[in-house]
Image 1 (cartoon, one colour):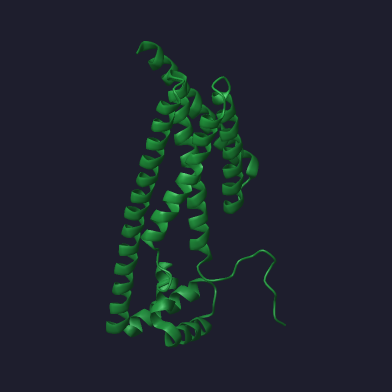
Image 2: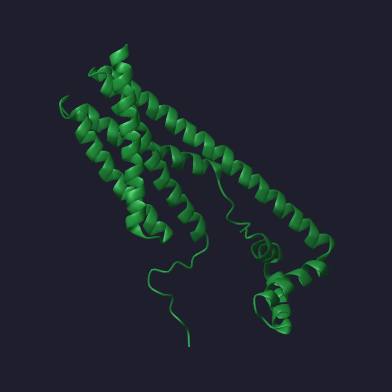
Length: 236
C-alpha cells in the first residue's frame, strides 16, 4: 500500500537549500533592522537634524547591504568551489577505480542497516542509474544538480538587509521629533519579534526563547547606541 507524505512535510529535491536561503533571508533582515536602528537612534540622540539622521541611515543601509552581499558572495563562492572540486575528485575515482567506489557505496548502505546483499544491490542499481549523483549524495552530501549559487546568495542577502533596514529608517524620519526615538524603538522591537518567530519556525525551535533573544539583543543595541550618541552629542 502506498504511503502519503505527512501534511506539511517537504520531500522535494533542494528543500534543505531553500530552507537555508529562507533562514539567511530572515537573518539578513534582522541584521538590517538592528544595525540601522542602532545608527539612526544613535544619531537622533546627538541631533534632531533630519538631514543628518537621513544621511547616516542611508549610508548605514548602503554599507550594510553591500557588506552582506559581498560576504555572502565570497562565502558561497568558496563553498561552490569546494563542492566542484569534490565532485571532480569523485568523478575521477569513479572512472579510475569503479570497483572500489562500488564497494565504498555498498558499505555506506550496509552501515545504515541494510543487509550486505541488499546494500550491494542498491549500490549497483544507483550506480547504474547515476553513478556520480549516487556517490556524491551518499559520500559527500552534495547534489551535483543543485550546487549553491553565490549570486543568488548575494542578491538575497542584499535585498533582505535593505528591507529590514528601511523599517527603522522610515520610522524615525516620519515621526515627530518628540516621539521619534520611542516610536522607532517600539517598531523595531515588533519587527525583531516577527523575525525571531520566523527563524524559530523555520528551524523547528521553540518560539518564545528565539523571540526574547532577538528582541533583547536589539533593545540592548539601541540602548547602547543611544547612550553613545547622547554622550558624544553633548561633548561636540
